[in-house]
Length: 353
Image (cartoon, rainbow, N blue to C red; front, top):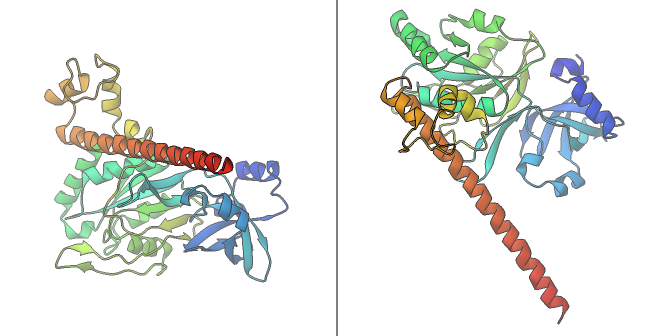
């Protein structure tokens, strides 16, 4: 195995040399346990911790290593190492942290493709698919939709669900599979690319860990059954971990996410709802909110059926969340700024006493 097999590329090597990190080793974070990191190199795995300078210079949790990160490290014992720096990330999957205003929860770094896993039945939600798509597009990650547990419905219902997805989501591959019957698994497996990193996104109980086990040809993740009383999955995956499959593809499994809060999605909304974004250029006002303005091309399209009402409502909901998140960030920055001014003023007063 070499670093390229783990996803290392020439851009990372150039950065490493330009920033005088070439005297250090390089490896990829495959799991995180609080502030301990397992880092895999081309020869072995190390139990690592971050250097003090990196810890104290960090501005937020986003500056600490996450699963999928490339790091510069030095070995000080047989299987122990110190992390000196986190190399630039080409992608970062994140969402609004649950219950924490203006904070992000980082899911994984340096992802190429994301499996958006939905199961037939209670969990199936086109709105949730669009949320995951927005997160993927914001991070420049290619999404792939996986409709799982198709053995629980007949062929007609399966085709109907696939058609619903394809009607609402354009240009994204859709695979219908069953971990139980293995129907569709071969086609999905054949689509995997060596040296590319995939992550699994979806709620608890949709079969993400079972799917990873099936693709790996063995049990690499613990699985559990659905709670029949509430028809929900139990949280079995409690942390993120990177796994290397026999065909050379790399997978990061994630704990199930019932809430998928929109954070800093940037252009992600525009790509997910490209039809609305294009129509908005024809609105009478440049700052049209598509709520009650005269001359709104989007509202007109909703009224005449060109834009599906459910799609429009989901767009508006996520747009409000994005605006709220951005305003919360601005509010926090202003508070930090005011606090800084207060401290400076206090020091100045103390200095004249």
